[in-house]
Length: 452
Image 1 (cartoon, helix red, strand yellow):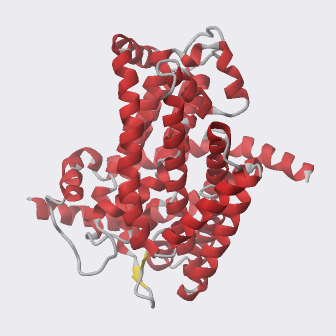
Image 2: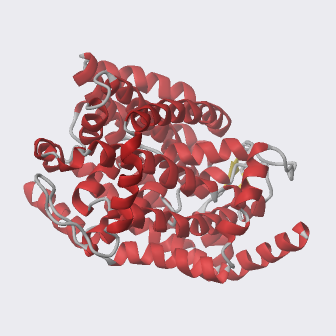
Image 3: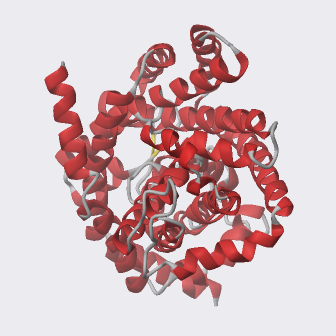
């Protein structure tokens, strides 16, 4: 077992820790941005109008509204990484890492547009009447490469349990035990039961819950961050200056700060942005495929996802950490060494509002639980694609079993293994996107003609 763990650490450090994977994802975003004529800027206002209901282009089929599909996808992307991951990026890469996080999100908006458009375009209606779509469908139907689609679906199922489930419930159980002395087993049993009630209702119930949780947790977290920014308003402009001043020069070591060069800022900023908004990884198209909107319209709506997830939520976390100077405190180095970025964010907020870590604990709860809901659906759709729609309940039971297990064990090795699966499933998805890029461009040209 120790040899297997060592192998995972070595493999993870050589894959996810290297440059080539972030370069692949951001390079894909740059290519599509140029190839499609910067759609993330041209159609941003259109996305707002569609998701708000001001523009109605609905089809007869579909199980969710455009807004519900968007919030379902966002609940899977907006997770504890928006709290802890950003803290780790700033500590290791300095404030300039945030700039590269923004750049990644901008190009990720186009990547998201492409994969969601394809996922919706090649979706299908199953025998039970449910709508199903995603990379496995457009890889099989659009490219006739079923073995590649099987690879994607298999890796997605593993990732759903290993990354979207166990670490999330483990995080919730730890927070509830630390802050409120709630036994971990009780947390697992309670949330397992609650999760079952939600996911047994399919995408309609999942989307309904997600469309309520996302605004609530956004209000709690965003509102709290605004209070801290208001308390330290005089440091807002200097914080932005710190971000932009060090973009190409890096940072010198100060106190407990690990020190950051240009390369470190670029690496960790890009990595945080990519893992945060999930652009190019193939998960979000599964949620967006359920929308009643036309394929091109839902693709336009998805542009908002990286913007809200990375440019809004992650930026609020970053500003709180930079403004309070928590990343410069030597006492906080222990959080980083133990991979507890969320604790650094909590320390930053607690330095201004002593009782705010309790509010943050609630936010972590909502972030993690909403992630579990969406990823249960991602895994279930891939399971159904592989084994048929009658097998849906069996996957949900399996997912629930790992929820109980994740609440009482340390899932670090599971998370490492799942991170590797994320790397793996991005390849077939990007392959499908690139080979089907002509169809996306044709759809966009037709969309432009309708807008004239």
